[in-house]
Length: 115
Ligand code: SF4
Ligand code: SF4
Image (cartoon, rainbow, N blue to C red; front, top):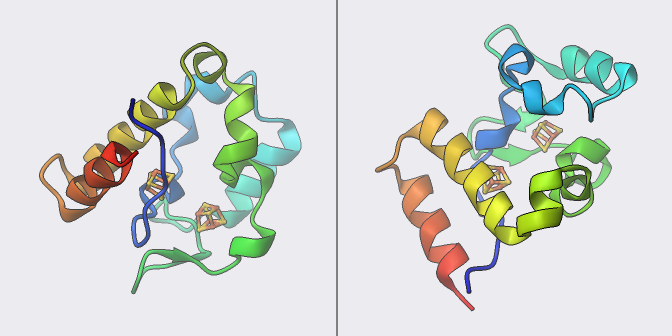
């Protein structure tokens, strides 16, 4: 069975587009939304993402909604399907940001295939 794993040098989930994320409307608080807006640059990317290497510059103090291991429990899809749900989410993010044939997608597929 595949296990979810975050890969290095990705950051595909660090670009925000809240109007397209209806699934978050009942999960994020008003404070979360205000924080996301304050973190978002004009191009939609989080200002804490180092674009030279796609790493989070505030990793140890990143907000709760960036901590997949904690935040995932807020989603019905995760409670029902576990890692399968997370793998689908990352696949969608990576595909929309970098493309289905990107090096990030290849690296993600290899990472989640490992036991
Ligand atoms: S999209 Fe998935 S693999 Fe990429 S940085 Fe986000 S959590 Fe990690
Ligand atoms: S705080 Fe870090 S993990 Fe969260 S969106 Fe920004 S760069 Fe990504």
